[in-house]
Image 1: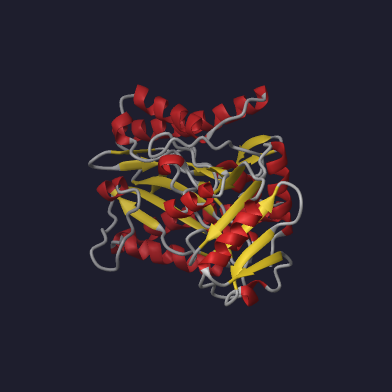
Image 2: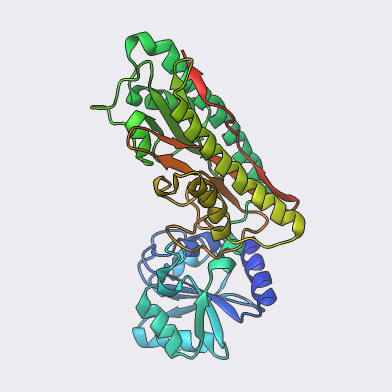
Length: 390
């Protein structure tokens, strides 16, 4: 079934940017955008092109063995069989188009966007159009949350905030028995199921040096026992178990004891300062009416940490897009792993999660944020102080 809202939004964007069309290509799932815009009823085995013109009706090019998988899509369809008929149909479809947006990123600068192989880009170029990146178009059409998705995200985020504090309390209750990182992760997974939340992996439950591995996940064997004097970090993500729901994703930290070491508190305060500086920057830009690109927000937080002497220990981007996968296809807050020039537009959600990772311990503070028409705001619980356990 074709997503009429996404197609309408795509054509609105194409008209505003004076782009003749969007060509969405997929082969064996290489481009997840196709299934979002026009979902087949089963497995598709041959190359598919969906052409969305700035004006007029979209057209789907599909092989005859797969045509039945799109029979209910409600789209005009051109069926090909041989390579020659595919190229002829594609040439006719693109006739008169000077430029075409595709899931392509020059020099693969945005890997999340760059879904189309070089040969297919060469094929389209050979037919006349200039191929440009669909980065902002794809985000506008497919990554903006609906009101229902926003409400579901906020409910999930509220549950995560409650569960992370229950997990810290669980450590305190079990401290005499020596709880392990894995045991607390299992507790969180059980609470997810009880709350009607779904998840694909995680959570991260780590202590001390393990906290400096941003994607550490405790295993049944070999995970650390949590003891008094330990530093603990929990990163957890989940969404409501309903079609189309979007994720919430937060990270909190705690100390097992009543007085955290001064250096832990110092690093914690710097990480929170960077987090809050990033959100304040977004809010200030919105008040001035300035557009913001993802890389600019990363720069604000990274500069804050660097000026305080810990820049070398902030080793990942500031934040990621959030959608029906925990790392969505929209703008990332990134000028470190990539230079993300996508605009932060109303309707998108993303994480803000600076971190400082030292050899003996690590600190990350992650909140979710939503860019509403009235400006950006934190859409998840926000940690303000170190949680004390015991």
